[in-house]
Amino acid sequence: MSAATDPLLRLLIVDDHPIWRNGVARDLQELGFGVVGTAGSGAQAVRIFEAARPDVVLLDLNLPDLPGAEVTRQLLAQNSSVRILVLSASAEPQDVLDAVTAGASGYVLKSAELAELADAVRATAAGRAVFTPGLAGLVLGEYRRLSAQPERAADGQRHTTPALTSRETEVLRLVAKGLTYPQIAERLFLSPRTVQNHVQNTLTKLQLNNKAQFVRYALEEGVD
Image (cartoon, rainbow, N blue to C red; front, side, top):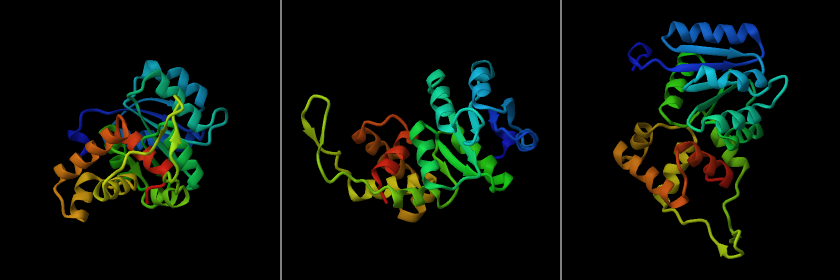
């Protein structure tokens, strides 16, 4: 679907480099997106966020005042339904993990083509997790922490991670790598509806509320 036929998506662009920030804003506006604000620092983004009311925040991680992960947490504290898409020059696994665990819905490198960025914005607005190819897999390979030992809950009782079927684990891994439902369906010879059902079943088992938390679980638990 082209941007011209999409409902107007409201974007807030946060980057401390004016040429980059203004260039991205101009390019996305030309594609039919609504840029409702720009900010050159984390504090400025937090300050104007409520008035701007964006659907998606394009956020650089390396800001002069607040780390991008902290900006993410503060914005989500104001409005938990906003989508945060990190747009960064860094491909470091720790940076990706920090962003996602803070609540970011996706992570795209600044080297992405404009069309790729536009697609990522639309996917993020639709609630899908988006990663530059290879980033999620890189993190998953580094953070292999599937629980082998039962954990102790707050009440002192021991519990184990809910058991996922092999198919649910496979779907979880592919969602974490940024594949769409149709792409997963094609790869696993399933219907998109079946893939969606697997995701919903897994969310229920893990007591997660959305796909951003779903991906965060995969990254933290090392599903690969």
